[in-house]
Image (tube, rainbow, N blue to C red):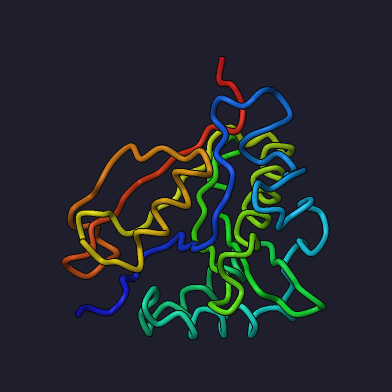
Length: 199
């Protein structure tokens, strides 16, 4: 079995979908009620990342061996220093993070997103992603993209990742079979989500 790809934009937690939700709901909107009753809002626990959070973020990456290759911690460290990001905490412990490259005033790319393995499937990823998309929307971002391993790679750990983005309102618009920043056999799925109307 091949080891996890050098892909960016990893996530493993359920989320709400939202392209057809009414204004004030959907992508980036605060979650007021989860069908499973797990999360009551997005404000608590999500904050901007600081240099003090770096080691916790890298430990999350290192612990997800099925999702990240050995060179990813150095890339996360560089990207977090260059672009900044957000973390989600539980009892003052960082349990997830996201790094976003604001490519243009109206466009951003999620470079990395991960939640600690022991904290998966309880809503942290959804809370984190919704809070970040809401902050980006409030800053004028219109569209957000993310690259992750395409389903054609037939690598089971990423089935949940693709489903996460799709439930979050992201739409796959392309697959790049041999992206230059990845080893062979790691096709990239390109997902986008609109945070605001463009017309």
